Length: 189
Image (cartoon, rainbow, N blue to C red; front, side):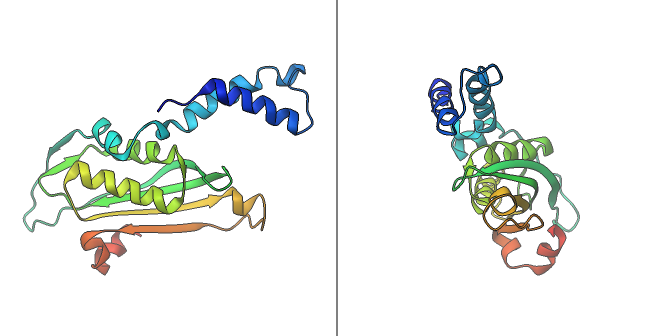
């Protein structure tokens, strides 16, 4: 499904009018077009299913072996942003940690960051971002041992409603051994 930029332009124009402004005034003339292009970029992930994202970033390599068979891959502090599906409010200062225990294949490290970025470019819940990333990593690597930890600020908490600017939200998606092995959990926190 492609993002309909023409519909976005039309509706942004209506929102400007509903706010009591004049979409024909100089400063707003190009605003509907700019917002449509911005939305197409910010919500690009809505064009793809988790499976399609896995196919886009699914190149893997043979996993190296270690003497004890306990390799772990951890990528921390992947910076992304998203928008909550309830208010379309920005989720910002978002840091994602992705970890997995390889089986036979590993994924390129940059692909992990690209997956996190693409998943975040949807109207989302923070909890679903973690679950979606974990689903994709599982599909690509074949590993059942996957963890995704996310810390973020939500403007629906910080800039409206309750207005608590220091509030942060932490979520964890722990699968396989990450769900049961406290020493693994401690390595990703």
